[in-house]
Every structure is written in structure tokens, then in C-alpha cells.
Length: 266
Image 1 (tube, one colour):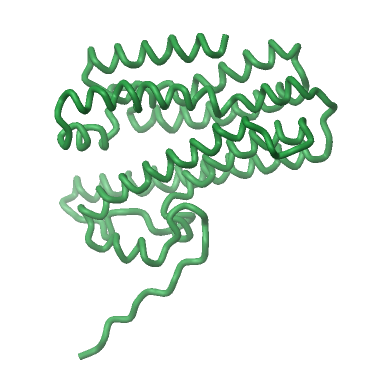
Image 2 (cartoon, rainbow, N blue to C red):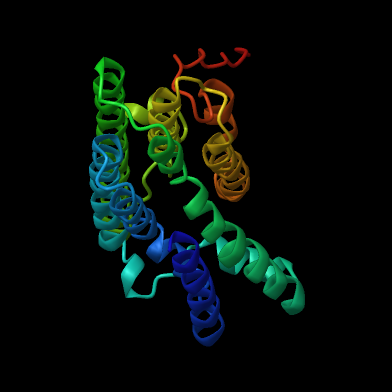
């Protein structure tokens, strides 16, 4: 059922992307498909307590991410700013292959793979324990961190937009305070953390971390790293001072910032 759902969504997003010349359709279902998949898994597992717990946690993740995406205009036809840039760098046939293979193909497969730890939980049913409670708390901590990071970013961009309307320039033109002081992408860190926790639930059920279902979390981490490198190349081309921010601030994992380089006097 989950595989059928993924196949239907992949075809639908590709058709929508071609018809609208908008490659952000996967973004619009990103927070929805995993929630549906987890509840399908929960039903097929006869409502196993661990799978239901994970489904509830992922539903909270999906609700928060959907809200954040909606308020930024994601459901009003606003395409991710990176796709037009990439489209301009490629020939039409190259971009079309990229859209089919990566944007609507690979990413829809990934949306299934990050939920397959539920298969491990189903194959190894056992009562909830202390480890599950600790993992649930850790998941909620990552959820809170991502919420705070996205809110800080939302407020910054509102201030930036207000300054632009008033004819002023906000300096720097990117966020460097709050959670963004210790990580250039704290929201990305928390997002990945939540899906590693989902994998950990399956590992706890199986009694071993050596599970093939880690593939979803691994591929998601690689996706975020690649996306971050591309996004930062765009930001660095717009703001020369971004290089110094990169030098002193960890890319994803929160870490105390390095000291600023002192400029020689005279």
C-alpha cells in the first residue's frame, strides 16, 4: 500500500511539474506523505503501540512543517528559488531528466524509505520501554528546536522585508543570531535528527542498530548535505560577508562559533 501510494504521488508530482513549470510539487507533499505512510504501517501492524507512537510523533512533525511551508506561500504556487537557478544552468532536456530522476523520482522514494523503520517495529513487536520514552522525548526536543529555528528565520525575513519596503538594507542579509549563531542550518540539523530517532525506534524494537532500514535516514542526511552546499553557494554569491559566517559557524551540527578574525591595523 505504501509503495503504491509513493508511485501514485511520484507520477502526480511529475505531471503537475510539467503542466505548471513548477518543480516544487514534491515540497508541497513532503510533510504529508510520511504521515500517511506511518498510519498505513500502524494499521497493517494491528495498531502496535510502538508504531502508533511513532505515527503520532511524525504527525506532529508533519503538522508543524505544513504550517511553516504554508505561511511562506508554498501552497500558493511559490516555487523554491533554487529550481529556477538550476533550470537556467541546464539545457531543457537535462533539467527535465533531473526533474524526473531526482526531484520527483528520488525524493518520492526517499519519503518512503524514511518511514520503513516501521517495518522493523512490525517484525519485532515488543512492549514499550524506557528507551522508547527517551526517544520520544528526544524527538520532541528536535521538533521544538526546528520550530524555534524556523520561527527565528521567519521573523528575520519579516524584518528584512520591512526594511526593504522602507528603503533600508538589513545587514547582514542573512540570519546569524539565536540558534543560527551555533549552526548555519539548525533547522536542517533538527529535521535530520527526528528521522534518525524514527530509525532508532526500529533499532530498539529489533534489539540491534544494524538494520537495513537506516538507509532512509542515511540518504536523507546526504540529501540535506548536498542541498546545503548548493544553497550556500547561492547565498555566498549574493553576500560576500557570508564567507566569514561560514568560517566561524558550523554548517549543520550546532557548535560554539569560532572567533572572528581580527583585521590588521594600519
